[in-house]
Image (cartoon, rainbow, N blue to C red; front, side):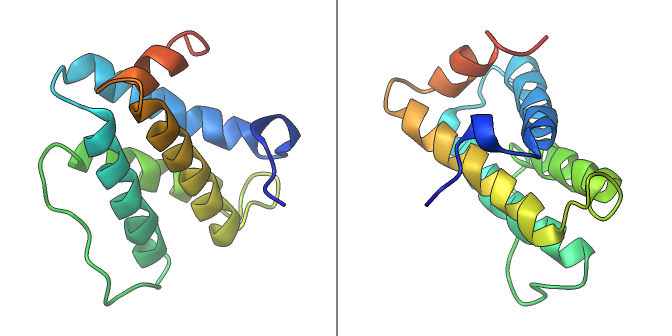
Length: 122
């Protein structure tokens, strides 16, 4: 059974990741939900690589996704093993949870996820 956002003991981590996504949507008017999904897929790999895993997996080098990847790596380095006993596996699961949400909202338009999250984030 998949945990929803309301039951997540690491909800603050999700919000921290989403804050970075919101910032990127505001900085880059060409950022679409599809590009964001690509960035989050690569971010999952990149953060694993920072912790010594996924060495043979490829991270996108597309310039449109680099800031999102770097944001997710930064959040991971700040939080994994340091706040609320967050593990790498749990962190990657939070990125995947957000990715799934982006995918759901993308059905409503190119930047629908941004329009959704900006109502909840400063």
